[in-house]
Length: 192
Image (cartoon, rainbow, N blue to C red):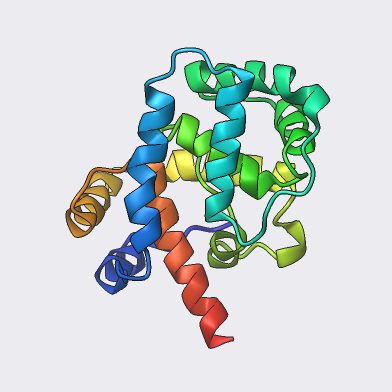
């Protein structure tokens, strides 16, 4: 898994089409603030979050394992506080929520944007991950570690400032990186 070079990412900032991102830019702060206001997530909070997470997905959820909602709320509370989960915990969340690591990554990001990056097929395309591996928990774990490491590099703060200036708001380092990777992946898809 390889994140493009800084100079390439800096060029992508200028290319960002904010008009096409309108719904995402409008709803993002509301989703983040929803979870920020809640100290301990209940099952109901998780369901509300799951519902608005799927407004960012191309499909509607078909499978919710209601028997796992309580344990999933506990896992999500751990993610909110600690910023880290094991692969097994991610798998349990995936089982609970439509068997989708993509959906889980978005929900986790809304709960803790500093520690969980959003993952989807466009981002996967940008970092060279094959489409059949997009729903892999292990690949998401690798992506998370890669993003956290990349966002701590010396040059990243400059890139983050440019993205926040372009967006006219402050987003986390992981969100900024994901926006660029999403845009790169979308461009690759459109050129294919």
